[in-house]
Length: 91
Image 1 (spheres, rainbow, N blue to C red):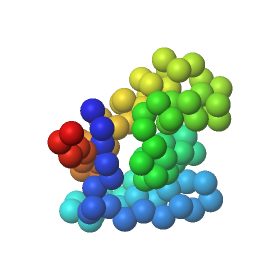
Image 2: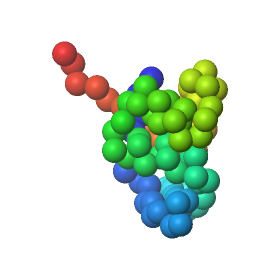
Image 3: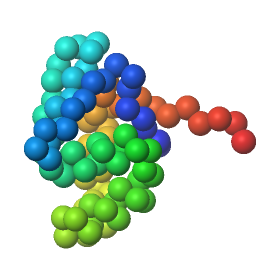
Image 4: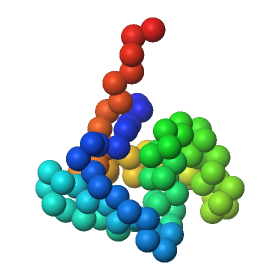
């Protein structure tokens, strides 16, 4: 399921980590380097396959591990309101 970053999110990169603020809840999050890579790629609208490939390359993990971690991370951010479901136009 494709996700997009909510419009109610402010974010700033600081020393390879990301500070992310949910404006609806005023809850800040600090993403470690791996989470920052994922968030940055999502911000650039990279698809899941591209994100998994980069995680495997950058962090020497298997594609299965990278895909599972990505899925869990996205579900967690969706539950916290950082991500929203993408609305795809009708083909």
